[in-house]
Amino acid sequence: MIEKNLASIEQARKQLNALVKKYNNDFQHPVVIKQSMLLDELINQYSRTGKQKEKPIV
Image (cartoon, rainbow, N blue to C red; front, top):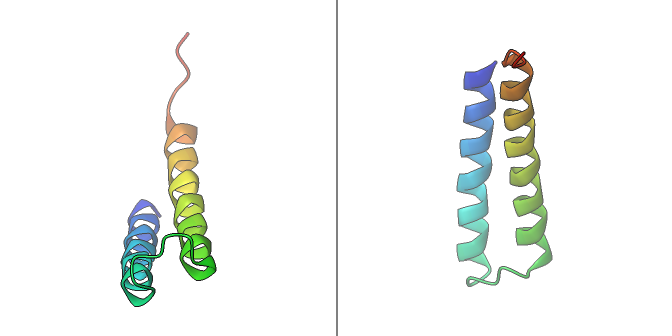
């Protein structure tokens, strides 16, 4: 599961880089922003998954 999440994050990161190049480093382009938001969500999901597996400190 973790490896799949990391692969999805890496794929989304590469896609974001490609879009930034395609739109001449325009980080405000709607397509770039949408991909950035997707990457953020994947990272957040990965982070939440890791935190769920941690044992609470008593």
